[in-house]
Amino acid sequence: MTILEAQSTPLVRAVGAVAGEALAALHRRNGSDLRCGVVVEEVTGSSTVSAVLLSDGTEIPADLVIVGIGAFPATGWLNDSGLVLENGVVCDAMLSAAPNVWAAGDVARWMSPDFGTLLRLEHWTNASEQAAHAVRNILDPAAATAYSHIPYFWSDWYGSRIQFSGVPWGEPQIVSGAWDAPAFAALYRDGNRVVGALTLNRRADIMKYRALIARSASWDEALQLAELRNAA
Ligand SMILES: Cc1cc2nc3c(=O)[nH]c(=O)nc-3n(C[C@H](O)[C@H](O)[C@H](O)COP(=O)(O)OP(=O)(O)OC[C@H]3O[C@@H](n4cnc5c(N)ncnc54)[C@H](O)[C@@H]3O)c2cc1C
Image (cartoon, rainbow, N blue to C red; front, side, top):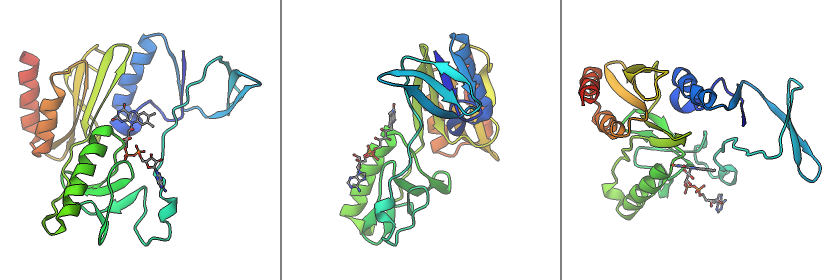
């Protein structure tokens, strides 16, 4: 299998470059030909696909091509609405984009009370929880509350479970295992606070780190949890 990736590593936006490189090794260890920093120019073939052409002239023979090239928020129909549209519909912490206008799901870029910045997520968990929260605020706007949510996603590669929670700020630090080990945990920090966690094949760990991130726990507290998890 050949995997073509435009970025420097797979998942670089989701987990950062260092962790992305560690996860990329999973592809290589499992016999996939991963090529990063490449641009697909064309898929060739007449009735069926025969090859993929790259911008550097490389031709990769193929009889099956699976395309996963991301998505962007379809806000064009709102261009003249007066709403702030910047990589989604910009909302306050209550998910309100303007008086009596609310947004939820992939299209919403809201002021996260957990991280103090605008976030836009493309995960099912967020889409359903955010929609429920928006509806509660719509039903009782006077008592509207901020939408708190710690991002979480998982993915399975070659039988390995990748899980991430929080935001991938700064350089991650390994706290369990090693980057090239079959299982590891790495944490991301913002000053003295733990803000993100990435685990590979440590299924019991991630929700514990997520709980720490949700209550703005300190970096030291996160390291203590890592010690406990390593001893378990
Ligand atoms: C291939 C793929 C795989 C995914 N896998 C996962 C996964 O494994 N785990 C995970 O957590 N998330 C996954 N996601 C992301 C997940 O699907 C989304 O986060 C989720 O569906 C977002 O829900 P939503 O309701 O915000 O938007 P959507 O599900 O995109 O629904 C928006 C709807 O609005 C409609 N629409 C758009 N414009 C208009 C308009 N002008 N008028 C009327 N209707 C309009 C669209 O047609 C669409 O039906 C995946 C997404 C894709 C594309």
